Image (cartoon, rainbow over all chains, first blue to last red; front, side, top):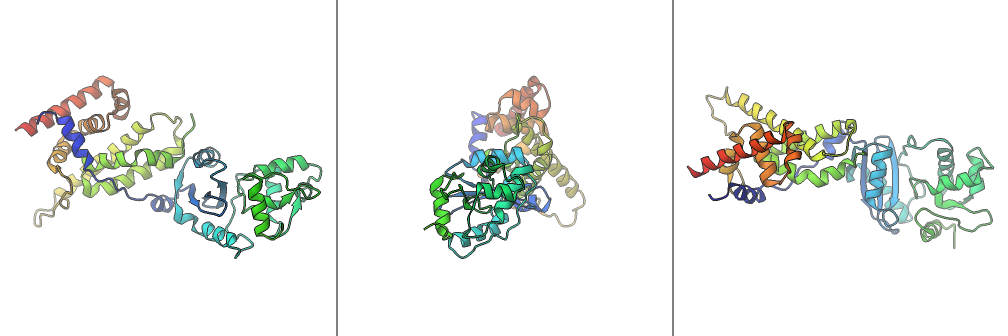
Length: 199
Length: 154
């Protein structure tokens, strides 16, 4: 018994490392403010997050790192952010169906409460554009109640926290050019082709 | 200072918190204490005003849960005279005797010894955890190690 600290350190290596899951208990206690998981898609992995009220975030992981997205959620929604794949099962299922061409509309609830003002109106107007249809920045600005705020509508779409589910890819520039997209223009083209809106 | 997403805290410290509890309350109660620790932490998390020293804060919660477990064990031990129920299933550890001795130390010494010797926690952080001075934290480590050593050289 020459060095008790070495003995302790060595013994600690044999302590069990498997830890119990927390997300079920956290949810049961009403403490799961933001549940998230990663979902595979033909456009690369997506980070998907929801509050008890509904979806708050969909993000292309290749476009913006998961850590950055989680930090943003901690700041904007609540620091009680936990990985909870089961909680996101309905969203994952609907996204799978959508990408396989078996779903046109998303039924999962959306939590709009962290969006405000004109941004929220523009995104709600965007959510009403149907599968296979397209609109324009001017069109959604008008739908949102401010026909002349075309540029502001573009900014709101650029800041869409739920791409794919809130289909900002269906909004094009007047005259038919594609305009920008949060996940890069190739993703916008992919989604429009998937929906048959672009040949 | 902004708070990191709770999952980041969990990913960084879950294994150490679990080992701390397995050592200081025993493997049979570690699961419960682990859940209690993290649920308490999650509940209080948004009220924290600072994002630094989160490890000391977490281990203080874990220490409090270990105290609860020791108290509960004390209460259970009293009435069972007729059927001496096993306090815990056989321990899967390689060196259960060592941890049993650690569990016999006073709370602060047990925490101090584990956090210093196994986790290598700096004394200023340990002082925050124990809500004591750095000198007192040092003494707790020293006393705890001394007692463990004495019992092991018997």
